[in-house]
Length: 100
Length: 531
Image 1 (cartoon, rainbow over the protein chains, first blue to last red):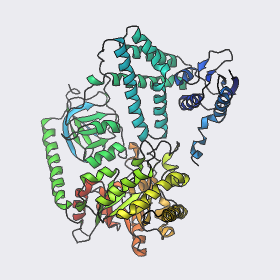
Image 2 (tube, rainbow over the protein chains, first blue to last red):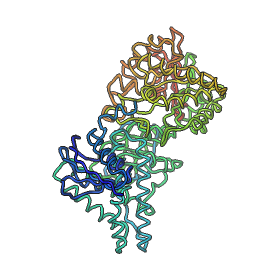
Image 3 (cartoon, rainbow over the protein chains, first blue to last red):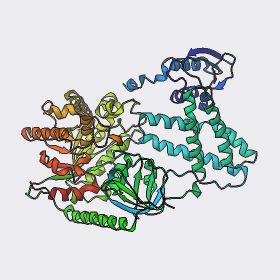
Image 4 (tube, each protein chain N blue to C red):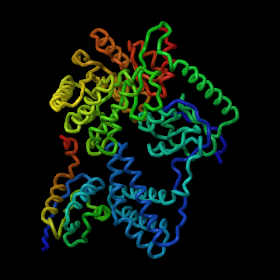
């Protein structure tokens, strides 16, 4: 079986998909078995979402429409979780309250 | 070769007193060249192991870094652990390149990609990539890396705790930092080991080499000293050693002023093993046992904590041991416990964090209640700002005590006191009249009263417990304690500083807790006070 999913999300974080958000993004992507990729344009190039080197290489600033696609087990959940993370601004502002 | 062979004296801030004379060792030296192993397989293995070594070092640094720095280090670790970074280098090695050249070429191509970005933010990441590149190159060339010669003065931007711990200090030597901080973990380690250390020396036009004289009593370093400089320096060093020697005669005696006023002098410790080098006869107990260092890499379980506390209590015999519940946060992050904050000194640290994470706090409370039967335990809470925080913490002790009693586990409820380090407590001690004791944390009290961060060398002149406003608060707390019968002690760095001790006694304190290395000098300074 080969589930697949795709979504687009707007990066609203002040400096975009930068160092710290990329760490969180790739860590989250790695929790899914599915193959996950990101791109800053609908027609690619596509980067491995589990590789911080590749994700950073996408150099996605604030205001970028980030394309996320996944294939395989848990593809739908993976895309949803990553979209949520971007929409939550990578939890960068929520960190203060996280441990509550 | 020295800098034009011109004598150069540079002033800094003393972080750990003492004198050191010896060759300079450059902490910031670029990596030495790598000697190729031979076969492609060996070269690839060497690169993989060097990356692992670099990751290991960064993981240690993450523990002592503050929020922002820790985030950067975690990014470095994530990059290094990504096969996509090492892949091209490993392939190039397969094609016949030596490990260092292959790694450098692979990283330089990544760096060029960042430098080409039209966005400032991503262009700035090139510096991170260079840092990552050099860390691995350094680890690769490790065998060839010069270790600091015995007795050397380690000079550079800053020093990692691992470097401090790896260095053999038995032949003397010292630390001279361009930046650094008197409140860093390395400074704390240097004070407890008696290693001379000066911070905040500032940048130099040219890197000095050759011999240097480090005066960590007054805070200065002399590069390319003249024979006359050496002569003067040795006199000061020997006078310091004499004073220390004279102080040692005070070590075994109870501390007392000239007029015969008795002063209790206890020690501050961070690790249970710290007590191994201290003779219990030379001090009046442990005035502060920090517990955040037990929380280094991972959160310690109840048994680990219980044994750590029990060890110190048994060492102390019947003398009091004051254990402070975990004071993580601020400049002491704990992975999985503390949170990342823009202003950590004013954030979720000390008791605030413990009350948010009661699951973790309860483990510590149970370990303390169980250890209490093995000696004279007192427990205090850090960063208390309101009476309610104390009540909540005390209530948790009562709950856990009831639970242990119900399970038939041996335990005892120790006296519960608070640190006086948030100005709100020092200004209104009457709101805390039901605590068992006060312990003034002069480092934090000073930084909060003077609005001068402990870890910022540029405002170090403000960061003194001798500032009149700080002394006035200390005196007020001491007077309140005397009037209401609440014991008051002080456990900050000021307590071990001979220059500050007269003012603290003047303010009414009769109970100080100091770093073990400062015990003798503190007692000598007390003996020098008239009243």
